[in-house]
Image 1: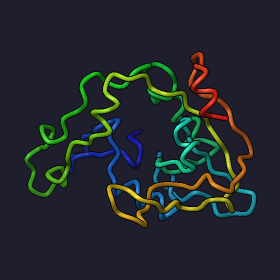
Image 2 (image 1 turned 180 degrees about the vertical axis):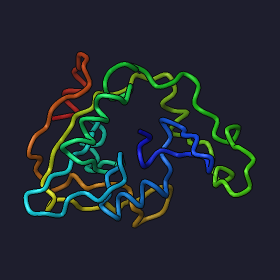
Image 3 (image 1 turned 45 degrees about the horizontal axis):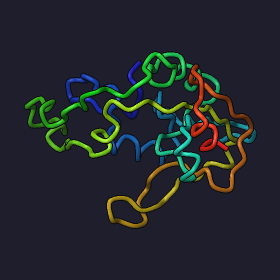
Length: 183
Protein backbone atom coordinates (compact mmCIF):
# COMPACT_ATOMS: atom_id res chain seq x y z
CA UNK A 1 0.00 0.00 0.00
CA UNK A 2 1.26 3.47 -0.87
CA UNK A 3 0.49 5.90 1.98
CA UNK A 4 -2.09 8.53 1.09
CA UNK A 5 0.38 11.40 1.67
CA UNK A 6 3.22 10.11 -0.52
CA UNK A 7 4.07 12.18 -3.60
CA UNK A 8 3.31 10.36 -6.81
CA UNK A 9 3.26 11.00 -10.50
CA UNK A 10 -0.02 11.06 -12.41
CA UNK A 11 0.92 7.58 -13.66
CA UNK A 12 0.79 6.41 -10.04
CA UNK A 13 4.54 5.92 -9.56
CA UNK A 14 5.24 6.77 -5.91
CA UNK A 15 8.22 8.63 -4.46
CA UNK A 16 8.50 6.92 -1.08
CA UNK A 17 10.02 9.20 1.54
CA UNK A 18 8.59 12.34 -0.09
CA UNK A 19 5.24 13.69 1.08
CA UNK A 20 3.00 15.71 -1.21
CA UNK A 21 2.10 18.99 0.58
CA UNK A 22 -1.45 19.10 -0.84
CA UNK A 23 -2.11 15.51 0.25
CA UNK A 24 -0.72 16.21 3.72
CA UNK A 25 -2.88 19.35 4.09
CA UNK A 26 -5.99 17.48 2.92
CA UNK A 27 -5.38 14.85 5.60
CA UNK A 28 -4.66 17.42 8.32
CA UNK A 29 -7.73 19.55 7.63
CA UNK A 30 -10.07 16.72 6.71
CA UNK A 31 -9.09 14.54 9.70
CA UNK A 32 -8.03 11.83 7.29
CA UNK A 33 -5.59 9.02 7.99
CA UNK A 34 -2.15 9.69 6.46
CA UNK A 35 -1.81 6.01 5.52
CA UNK A 36 -5.16 4.99 4.02
CA UNK A 37 -6.69 8.43 3.39
CA UNK A 38 -9.99 7.49 5.03
CA UNK A 39 -11.65 9.62 7.76
CA UNK A 40 -10.44 9.17 11.31
CA UNK A 41 -13.22 8.06 13.61
CA UNK A 42 -15.33 10.86 15.08
CA UNK A 43 -17.25 8.59 17.45
CA UNK A 44 -16.89 9.16 21.21
CA UNK A 45 -14.00 7.15 22.58
CA UNK A 46 -12.43 6.85 19.14
CA UNK A 47 -8.66 7.12 18.88
CA UNK A 48 -6.00 8.33 16.52
CA UNK A 49 -2.24 7.79 16.56
CA UNK A 50 0.76 9.98 15.78
CA UNK A 51 4.29 8.84 14.98
CA UNK A 52 6.49 11.31 16.83
CA UNK A 53 10.18 12.09 16.84
CA UNK A 54 11.78 13.88 19.79
CA UNK A 55 11.88 17.09 17.68
CA UNK A 56 8.09 16.91 17.18
CA UNK A 57 7.56 16.64 20.93
CA UNK A 58 9.79 19.65 21.58
CA UNK A 59 8.11 21.90 19.01
CA UNK A 60 4.59 20.88 20.07
CA UNK A 61 3.19 19.45 16.83
CA UNK A 62 3.52 16.59 14.39
CA UNK A 63 3.94 17.61 10.76
CA UNK A 64 2.71 14.15 9.73
CA UNK A 65 -1.02 13.46 9.62
CA UNK A 66 -2.67 11.22 12.21
CA UNK A 67 -3.25 7.53 11.57
CA UNK A 68 -5.97 5.07 12.51
CA UNK A 69 -4.72 3.78 15.86
CA UNK A 70 -5.97 0.23 15.40
CA UNK A 71 -4.61 -0.82 12.03
CA UNK A 72 -2.88 1.86 9.92
CA UNK A 73 -0.44 2.77 12.71
CA UNK A 74 0.47 -0.91 13.14
CA UNK A 75 0.92 -1.32 9.38
CA UNK A 76 3.13 1.79 9.12
CA UNK A 77 5.35 0.82 12.04
CA UNK A 78 5.82 -2.60 10.45
CA UNK A 79 6.56 -1.67 6.83
CA UNK A 80 8.25 1.76 6.90
CA UNK A 81 12.02 1.14 7.08
CA UNK A 82 12.71 4.53 8.68
CA UNK A 83 10.29 3.77 11.51
CA UNK A 84 10.84 0.03 11.99
CA UNK A 85 14.61 0.45 12.32
CA UNK A 86 15.73 -1.19 9.05
CA UNK A 87 17.12 2.18 7.93
CA UNK A 88 19.31 3.87 10.53
CA UNK A 89 20.32 6.89 8.41
CA UNK A 90 18.60 9.08 5.86
CA UNK A 91 19.77 8.54 2.29
CA UNK A 92 23.27 9.92 1.79
CA UNK A 93 22.27 11.71 -1.41
CA UNK A 94 18.94 13.53 -1.25
CA UNK A 95 16.47 12.74 -4.00
CA UNK A 96 16.58 15.33 -6.78
CA UNK A 97 12.89 16.07 -7.30
CA UNK A 98 13.54 18.35 -10.26
CA UNK A 99 15.40 15.53 -12.04
CA UNK A 100 12.57 13.13 -11.18
CA UNK A 101 10.00 15.07 -13.20
CA UNK A 102 8.24 12.81 -15.68
CA UNK A 103 7.49 15.20 -18.53
CA UNK A 104 3.72 14.56 -18.46
CA UNK A 105 2.26 18.10 -18.77
CA UNK A 106 -0.77 17.07 -16.66
CA UNK A 107 1.34 15.68 -13.80
CA UNK A 108 1.97 18.15 -10.99
CA UNK A 109 5.59 16.97 -10.69
CA UNK A 110 6.57 20.06 -12.71
CA UNK A 111 5.87 21.99 -9.49
CA UNK A 112 8.16 19.84 -7.32
CA UNK A 113 11.22 21.57 -5.94
CA UNK A 114 14.12 20.34 -3.88
CA UNK A 115 13.93 20.92 -0.14
CA UNK A 116 16.66 22.32 2.08
CA UNK A 117 15.36 19.98 4.78
CA UNK A 118 16.24 16.92 2.67
CA UNK A 119 19.73 18.28 2.02
CA UNK A 120 20.29 18.96 5.73
CA UNK A 121 19.17 15.45 6.72
CA UNK A 122 21.20 13.63 4.04
CA UNK A 123 23.29 10.90 5.64
CA UNK A 124 22.29 11.81 9.22
CA UNK A 125 20.89 9.26 11.71
CA UNK A 126 17.14 8.78 11.64
CA UNK A 127 15.75 9.74 15.06
CA UNK A 128 13.71 7.28 17.10
CA UNK A 129 9.96 7.23 16.59
CA UNK A 130 7.32 6.97 19.29
CA UNK A 131 3.75 5.88 18.67
CA UNK A 132 1.36 8.05 20.70
CA UNK A 133 -2.36 7.37 20.86
CA UNK A 134 -4.90 10.11 21.58
CA UNK A 135 -8.66 10.44 21.96
CA UNK A 136 -10.50 11.85 18.92
CA UNK A 137 -11.77 14.83 20.91
CA UNK A 138 -8.15 16.03 21.28
CA UNK A 139 -7.46 16.33 17.54
CA UNK A 140 -6.54 19.90 16.58
CA UNK A 141 -4.74 21.11 13.48
CA UNK A 142 -1.69 23.22 14.35
CA UNK A 143 -1.24 26.58 12.66
CA UNK A 144 2.16 28.23 12.83
CA UNK A 145 4.90 29.93 10.83
CA UNK A 146 6.75 28.44 7.89
CA UNK A 147 9.11 30.02 5.40
CA UNK A 148 8.37 33.53 6.68
CA UNK A 149 4.59 33.10 6.50
CA UNK A 150 2.37 33.17 9.59
CA UNK A 151 -0.85 31.25 10.19
CA UNK A 152 0.14 28.31 7.99
CA UNK A 153 -1.18 24.80 8.55
CA UNK A 154 1.86 22.85 9.76
CA UNK A 155 0.54 19.74 11.51
CA UNK A 156 -1.40 18.18 14.38
CA UNK A 157 -1.09 19.89 17.75
CA UNK A 158 0.55 18.17 20.72
CA UNK A 159 0.16 21.21 22.95
CA UNK A 160 -2.37 20.80 25.75
CA UNK A 161 -3.27 17.20 24.86
CA UNK A 162 -2.48 14.11 26.90
CA UNK A 163 -1.69 10.87 25.12
CA UNK A 164 -3.54 7.72 26.16
CA UNK A 165 -0.35 5.74 25.53
CA UNK A 166 3.16 6.28 24.19
CA UNK A 167 5.66 3.63 23.19
CA UNK A 168 8.98 3.56 21.39
CA UNK A 169 8.61 1.81 18.03
CA UNK A 170 12.12 2.23 16.61
CA UNK A 171 14.08 -0.80 17.87
CA UNK A 172 17.46 0.64 18.76
CA UNK A 173 19.31 2.12 21.67
CA UNK A 174 18.51 5.70 22.44
CA UNK A 175 21.15 8.32 23.02
CA UNK A 176 20.98 10.58 26.05
CA UNK A 177 19.91 13.40 23.67
CA UNK A 178 17.03 11.26 22.36
CA UNK A 179 15.86 10.57 25.90
CA UNK A 180 16.21 14.20 26.99
CA UNK A 181 14.30 15.40 23.90
CA UNK A 182 11.47 12.94 24.48
CA UNK A 183 11.08 13.98 28.11
